[in-house]
Amino acid sequence: MTSFPLPRPHFIDPLIALAAVAPALLDQVTTDTSRQAWTALAVHTVVAAAGLLVRRRLPLTGFAVMLTTLAVVEIWCAAQEVQLGNLAVLPLAFSLYAVGAYCSLPRALAGVCGGTVLVCLGVMVNHATATTDWRGGSDVFATVAPVPVACALGIVVQSHRLTLEAVRARAADAQREHALLAERAAAAERVRIARDMHDVVAHSLTLLVVHAETIRARSADLPPWANRQVDALAAAGRQATVEMRELLGVLRNGTPPEQAPLSPAPSFAELPELVRSARQAGNPVRLDIHGDPATLPKPVQLMCYRIVQETLANARRHAPGAAVTIGATVSGPAVRVTVRSAPSPYEVVPVPGAGTGLEGMRERVTALGGEFTAGGTEDGGFLVTASVPAAHDTGRTW
Image (cartoon, rainbow, N blue to C red):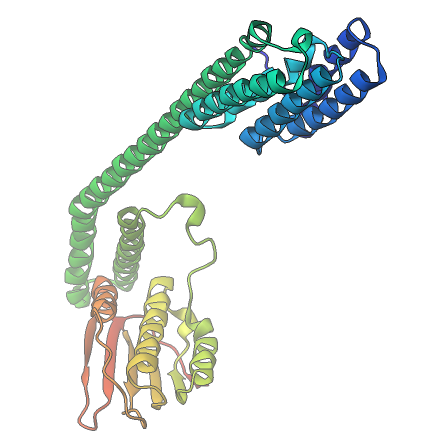
């Protein structure tokens, strides 16, 4: 079904005002062409047109002013023994329609009742000021009687509009509820998938790494090429475990695909920038790296980066201004990372934490088959140590 947009109010309202006052002007030509009649009709026309232009914003005010003006004009014309055409009441119908369409029902009924009282008062004043032949009566009431029908039509239109708005609001609420239910169902499904993947895949990957470590323990009985294959198998199993853990985190947290990070995972190469940020925050930081961290597998580099990142964040939070020493040594079959934070030189108000940071670091290290320790030192500082199997190379210092 094709719909056509209606003109905007500032275009259609002047047309409605013209359509309301034009018939009275044409009717006056055949009713009374005296100068007094045209003057009275001109006054009424100007007021009626102005009232119709504001009928959306001030419907009751426009109607009251218009009806009062018409009553005064009709009383004056009767006293001058000139006559206005019957169609002069037509703008009242348009105004009363606006009262019914844009006012509440009590206000609309009050407007009709007030208009009725004003008409009755006008007839009484007309009887007191005009001669017998120019006194109005039943003919006046017969002329204005159909006008309130326009108010009833406006009330019906307003009721229809409010019903449509209520239906649209209910449809929007139902759509939002449907989207919410779908989102909850999707979240529940993601949690179920994450649980199944953890129960099945994680268990299998753990067994793979355990078997590889068992074979490595008997490396003396294996040829060199087999040792290399076993090491590669163990490293691949650990890497798959870390990547699966990150995937499970996305599934559990419900991160939308479009919001998933697209940049590469941090590595050792970003540690100097991380240290510079900590220094700018007020913590003197020293970073010593021995060995070539570029030879480490990506999951191991990411683990080391996250440990340093979380430890520096804890130092800023719990020991502002404290000196931090970071050491990373790639030696033999393992990489060892130590982060030592000295006591804060300032008086620090204890800040409670959830403890998820340390737990997350421990999970990362454990997933790679390493060891993790964290705790206070004798001088009041804090020490974090992580040792993870890795490759061997030479060293350098930043």
